[in-house]
Length: 257
Length: 290
Image (tube, rainbow over all chains, first blue to last red; front, top):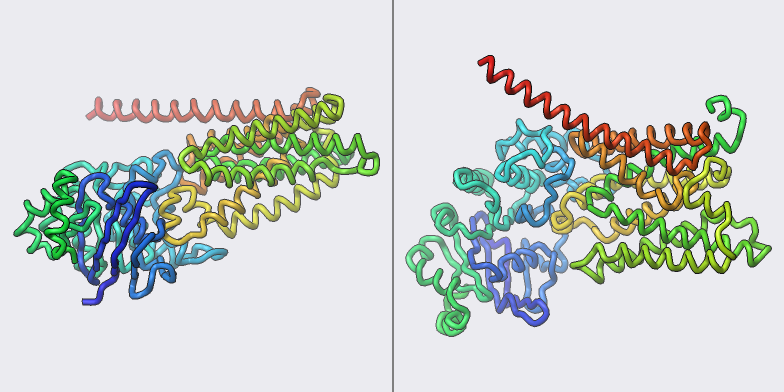
């Protein structure tokens, strides 16, 4: 299978602290990859690097066969952030307007929103089951509904890759399963490659095709079946004490990629 | 006043400028308020004050430049201040609001120095602080008209980008929107509109015309476009109502415009409460019946 993202020997540090240490990762087209790891393990930094919000200090990122510094096709990548971080719930915008904003790049600067764009917005809302909320203000919806709207916003520009950063934060427990089921459908029915950062290891392991355990280093990267067999070991390594981790890093160097 | 508009040029100027400002200030104000930058207008208006004071000083010291319209130097200072704010916001990434008091106090500091050098306040300066119906010249009107055309065209052309940047900046950047360029264009527009508004509303009250109509609109509007529509409507009602009452009661228009905007805000707050109450009563009635 062709890979959509190829990361080679990637390093990143914030001032004195090294957050990503020699990351090697490749994501095959059509896969559903979950990146798990504790808080501060560099998951969000890795996503920001892939999205071009941060620049790699060392190492390379190749997106759709092109080095990230030359990559221009950003509409191929949809992004759903941690809702709580970047969204003002009092913002006076309807669900339709929010989803339509996902087309901004595709329509292009100095050009206007047209009828065919409205059809694309409605189709994206249908795909996430939110078409009846079209005219509601985004702040009036529940956390789970808002997150569906943000997925529709990412879907509207017809991306090949969808990146989600802990999308279930603020979604109540009973809706989490339905939410992941919807992601699975997008993956299988539409062939969209999914990259998901999450804490819900238990919930996702039967839904994703690949797992990566990250805590500064990539402790494990492989298919879910492989992960299941060595799950406890991998998780304790990823979530374990720092010193413990460092001593493991050399022993398990071969597991990385 | 309606008759006066046809008779007196100064009233025509004030009225037409008022209509333009009542449209522009809330239009830009919507984007400022939703991005939680309401105080930026205050900072820039105080920088504009420094520009106007500098212009009045130059006029006094150099007789050759006596005809210089203070609006121009006011605009230069305002645009300069806006660029400094953007720069400071990138320097203090985690304290972005810090840019506002820095620029605001620098503006007042400079303004006060220029005023004292020009031997203190005079009526001209007073009209810049609180607005004046008689102060608007035909040249002012022409300049403000040009600014209006440019701002409206830019807002129409960049509406999508401004919306996505206001709603979710991280997402906008991740989808490849040139955030810096658009911020830059936007803040320069704000600076120009602030400088243009001061003749009517006055430096001290300019920011209110950018925020109060929006504050009222947000209470009752559905969606972003409706928020803009109501904001502009409230802005126009405030400006026209304010100009009428200022003319008839011989008051500074800045004050009357702001007070009408405040009254509209209070009305929307109470009407929303009343609507919620009515809705709840209906629900209770429905449950009792069933």
